[in-house]
Image 1: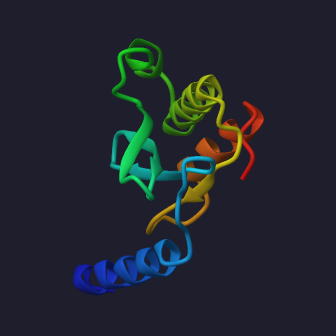
Image 2 (image 1 turned 60 degrees about the vertical axis):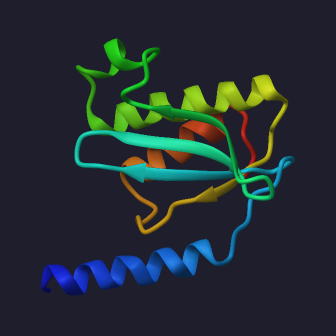
Length: 121
């Protein structure tokens, strides 16, 4: 498949997934972005267009610990960190937004770690 066609498929999947979900203050949207080296997640209140918390493999709390880990293990650490930050704000339920990414690999590892840390989605 050509790279243009692959991008079209990803854009179509992202619109399909994103069109069905909307984050609120009580139940924010947990949006995931992954690059070739890092993974980023943020909890977004779409009603106010505001980011509540964020975490990534580049964050100061994780940077030293995740450099020697595999990508999936680093994603698990990011999931635990974002879950603990949301728990500190009193948020227990979120809506998971995987974007254009399939639910496997690093995205699934992040989601499973966030669930294990106490988030409900």
